[in-house]
Image (cartoon, rainbow, N blue to C red; front, side, top):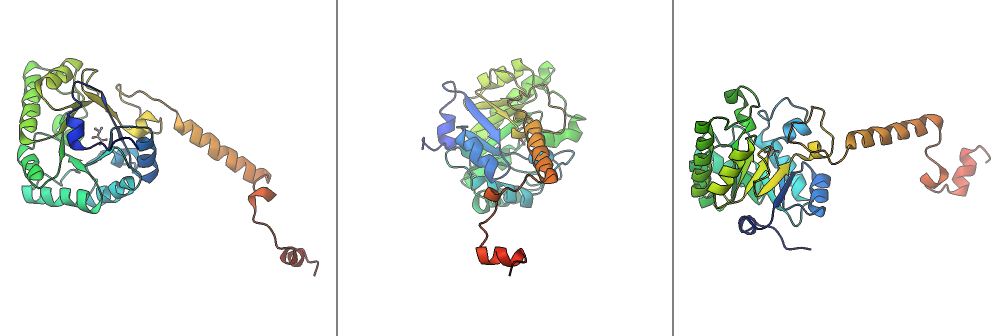
Length: 277
Ligand code: KIV
């Protein structure tokens, strides 16, 4: 096995080697993306939409994140495993934030947590508790209602400068890496230049130190139309539909199962069942 990726080793990659992060939601997807050689596996709260069919990420609970993270952890060996802190799990108090993050790490097996926004007090407390933290700025989907929809952020000079300040404050508070989502490429570049930790972009242009995509988008499994920044590397929706339709046709025409797909019949039992004894 190639060397295990840690939060500390990831930080040293800035400016050297691009970082690849992909989401996973269960053991098979965790195992497969790890086998494909990604650096970071994110159990993102996007799973609320991608695999639970919800309209946004806001209803996902800590319990559900623990459940999915534990499943992903069973499949991941080499990559760094990061779990998202769901909406409501880090907004109430610093104490509750640490308690919820401890569940994701202790109960579920995450090696770091990610939280949205410039929550510097929470980040400091988590780092003090020994938990590596990934930050997330820009179009943070949990702020959907504040933004009035999934809108590109940092479009004015003030907004862009504010995002750079948030990134610096998060670095200062101790995050080891930063997701930058839904900003113009020049803002992704400015944030990347402003901090000494790696930035991982999603819809933030090519200058970030790494890129992340939601697995269901990358594989062509999502029901919703893919956002502009998604590149589809497979059309698994079609592959799955075709495979299941072939199975259905085989069952209906009686060509499944064959003798090779059945357990051997004990001769005595077969003769009895055929009414021969
Ligand atoms: O929830 C998620 O999948 C994420 C990524 C899009 C960064 O936060």
